Image (cartoon, rainbow, N blue to C red; front, side):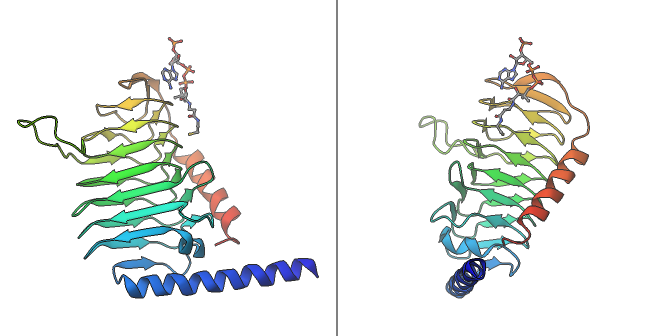
Length: 231
Ligand SMILES: CC(C)(COP(=O)(O)OP(=O)(O)OC[C@H]1O[C@@H](n2cnc3c(N)ncnc32)[C@H](O)[C@@H]1OP(=O)(O)O)[C@@H](O)C(=O)NCCC(=O)NCCS
């Protein structure tokens, strides 16, 4: 009896949240939340400029937490959250900022845990990438150095199956090769080759790492199965 009541209440909340999302999508024609993405996105904070495009694909999940996810996309900016990605807000909010004309593409099965991704130009994130809590990715300095040296913008690319641990900062112009791992509290100022473990400030290679595809695909399967009933 109690379980049935809980199911009824949860169902009603979900219907209410779907209605809120439909309303948001009517207000912002550039916002597209797949019907099989989590209805919890109704509790996210969206700030969308003119011509901003946001695509949240099927199975993308987050917790039902007010402002647990903050999505700010400036005029003409584009954000894509790939299928079955998980934006985990338990430790800290997930903040995705795309400035006017910028692009942020996140591949399928990403695990974005309380992190901050910021694009003024282009940030590309591959398949099944993990970004730990307190970590940040910037493709711009965000400010000029002085009158003679304006702000620099350089695209960032993060390959498939990369694991960025907690409290890492990735700076403009960096490419992190597929299957690589970046240790906690690192500052990544220069690109990292594929299959490398790197750490430190600035991050330097510590050693090599093998194929991460299999364990990460297994992790993705578990997340999809575990969250299947909750979206
Ligand atoms: C990157 C990491 C996986 C490296 O593991 P590893 O390859 O087994 O490395 P080891 O522990 O064998 O250490 C190798 C060397 O690198 C150093 N090192 C390891 N991680 C480091 C880091 N994050 N920053 C600076 N140096 C580091 C070690 O001190 C050691 O140096 P030494 O040879 O002079 O003694 C691990 O250190 C790490 O950062 N884990 C992430 C933990 C985390 O943030 N989890 C939260 C969830 S995302």
